[in-house]
Length: 219
Length: 219
Image (cartoon, rainbow over all chains, first blue to last red; front, side, top):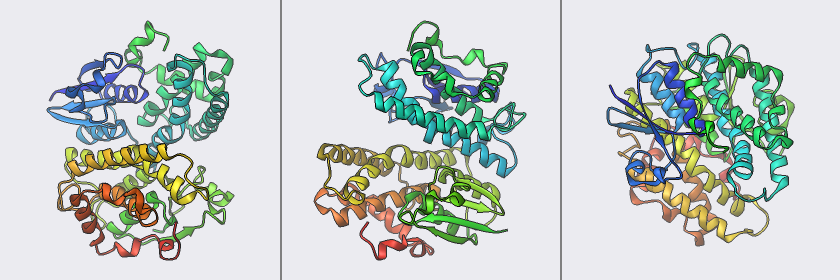
């Protein structure tokens, strides 16, 4: 079996899948895509993901995209390999999936708005009100995750794909904070969420998955 | 076992779950929420879904929201009840889940934009360019579903949750077409997609799930 993992450094959805691959102790070839070089829009990549987005996975010639679907596929295809990505019990599994879905639906949009305006745009932020509103939406969303957190991981003693969905998104906040400390993005995280982050960071494979370009670039 | 299904008439995500409940031949109590009456924002409902959105499910006191997560929960909890919501084979299951995820990620946002501007807003559409762009995005997205369609259902001979995700969204287009024929929304669907729609409409439980308020209201 051969897995190729198409990865974009700095993409929270790519990072989620990377953490999942490591958690399941799968072997894979990492293909680091370069958005600036147009890798995502080349016909070769569009044949893998017609939306021209990362991540994507190829398993023995089978292409798959949409990070939440890749997570499910890994668990379905390799149920006894490495650690499970979801709790076994249907209700706890549903809660973990719900948390991961809430990251995508409620936390990602306002985080994306702030990243676009403050990190990716070469111009000054066009709209202070938009950032203020996004910051408020981030704060409300984090309060829900704080309330749901069982500890040490979101669902208790074992890390699940819910942790792998939330962690990269909260790292976007620390990244925003690094470059725009006046907005106080990191301060939006409660002490409990900061402790949860340190638990994820203590996973044996964690350091290996940190976005490579963060070592050399500011965005 | 007692299932209460909190439903909003006209919500494509509510309709998806309704089709899934029927496909799995589950018994449930239908609670029709009224957005105009503020039902979604009442504390009693916010205790079930803090986002104040529909659908939501209660199963013997266990509350769940996010329609894609409800779909997974129904299949996990009642694997041998009624018909399966996903193909059994992991790769075909992944494709079906990917199609359902693509409905949410790529088709819903431009459809929502058109519904807001043309059906929900009491003012004239503010921005013709926005509708033109949304129409183009809908067209591109439908082309992908047309290309993926196996027939008679998206994944072949059996209806899956991918059909239940896509169908309500295409019905938003026929609804838009009914009230704003000049935009030609229904014409965006290929003959193959129209035939696929008639297959879904021929499912024995289909008529039962049509949005009740469409019988009496224009939006």
